[in-house]
Picture 1 (tube, one colour):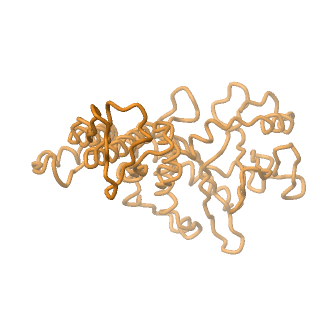
Picture 2: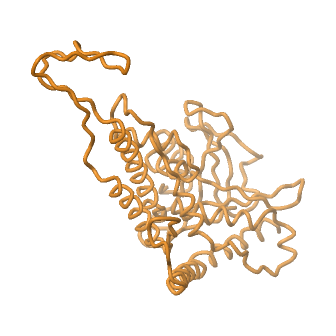
Picture 3: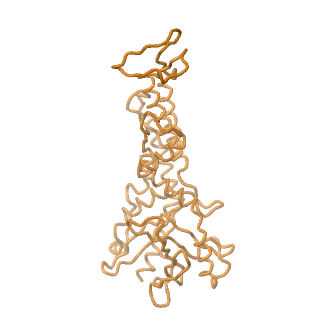
Length: 350
């Protein structure tokens, strides 16, 4: 979102909220659904590929997204060495916060971490902001503000959504109709800075918001399609499809193990099974998993059926590949995130 003038920010927010684009937001929550293994969401995607009222088998869903994301995003598996004891005593659950932030960043592409001072605990706590919109002035490289929705547990989609707006100077709440709700006298930002740390999966290229783990999500969907087809093929091969030829009206025939079947002269009845090779389905599923893992610097160890024996040198090389990728993330991404978060927290604590 770009605003031409800071003096027009409120009217710009009203115009933006009256026509919020939901495409990117829905994609981010779809990614989260796969990461959390939400069966209803995955089955909803499968229904587009199996438009049948009676599929004969249940949808088969596998959640490989979380396994791949968690296996790849291990930069904070061993917490970095932080030597500022006063700072560490002033923050809450920092290591767990950064583990979660790294995984969500690798999944979503761009992720926002909010630093919030708890007056009672006298510590900084952190909020993971999934849905947010950066606000830019023309030709500015970094946002001058952020806006994000505030959801309540149990809130339905048709309820009025309230958004929080932050800039270096202002902080207030605003609903979808543009009505402003003050959080303090004068709608002042109590920190004097944006209390956020932006995390990006990739270095800056052309767009501020980076692309997430689209390859992993698409592979997960393809695996679910193949697994459902595999289940359907196995059932049809086991039971077969009843086929009757040489008869005009099939209603004259009743099927059942307790019912004798009488066919007119010249008619025939048989069970026909599909001719596909089930092993091909299994190999295709493994191929998709291997491919997306390889593209994310990972190697899958299959328990049976493929590469049952892997040399120690091959495992060593795979580990080196992943280690180099993680070290690259440290240098290009997370070192900067650590510094920016520390600067934000230090200003809040002043």
